[in-house]
Length: 125
Image (cartoon, rainbow, N blue to C red; front, side, top):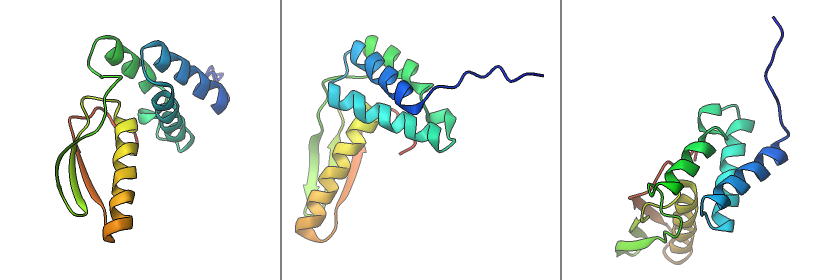
């Protein structure tokens, strides 16, 4: 039986995902970050968390399940430990911001631990 699978270059899929996410209201930087994560999952063979999720994210953006303007809000902090609320934002974008915060805390405290709540699907992480 012939293989009828269509294949696309990673760059083509990445551009498609960015365009789809932007069209649904995602900020440009967030759309690129999320698309990179989805393509990265596919390139690693984790197709359940790859570009097929773009359609799900787009639908959730359009119907209010994902807040395209979400920012991390600090809920509680104690030195290197921070709890944040992601405001129902794009999971991969919120996780990236949380990681940046953890690195910031680690540079000033020697360790950085950030817990995230109220986020959406975080891809393959």
